[in-house]
Length: 270
Image (cartoon, rainbow, N blue to C red; front, side, top):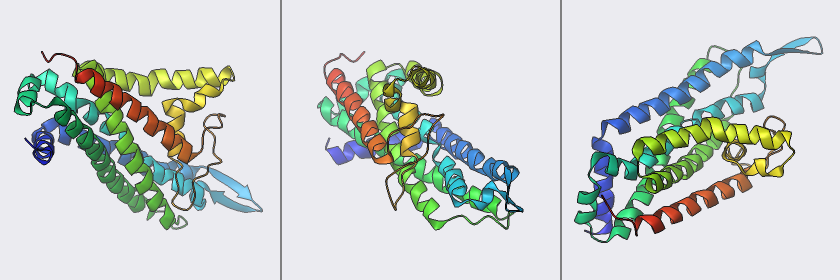
């Protein structure tokens, strides 16, 4: 079986699995909710400047950050990536998959490519729909004027985060092999362990906090088409620039994928 046929086979597995569509729907809902409620929060944030009352919606930076919420579906890209290989073991189809293509490395590389593509696809679709929801909500606020650049920035950050987190998910799924364990472990790390470590390193004044996933993703979310520098801070932590954050995340993904490929080529298939 050639590589193109393997990719086609992996694509069919995704399309025919109900979980794919449920997770895509979850990414759309999660991103849309985050963007949809932000105008209400920003509008409630008022300040008086020179006798004129302003709201957060009058700031182009605030609106740009609002549309950045549309890229929040990367969690679902990560889960789908984990299911690409761990799901084979959960469903008992791993043996059939590797028998159909005895050259195991070809199967694994096909899954790597598909993980990047599915991560990208989830983020592009959920980000586009969520940004549409945000633009629709903003029509109720006449003083809000979203900059066109916000949509380009969103497309850039959504694409990069989708590819990176899709690959991270695949690598963890390959290393753990247990689908439930891989997904629970990934979510526990992203929502609990990593944020706690970030806060602890900040309190203890350790610079290593900049290199944890929470800080790196937040740093990457400030990618701009017009420039790649950031002046924002995460809870007082002066994190890495968007370009460096993206490079470190890609390095993490590459290292995890390399480890997953190395172990998967040697381990027995049950």
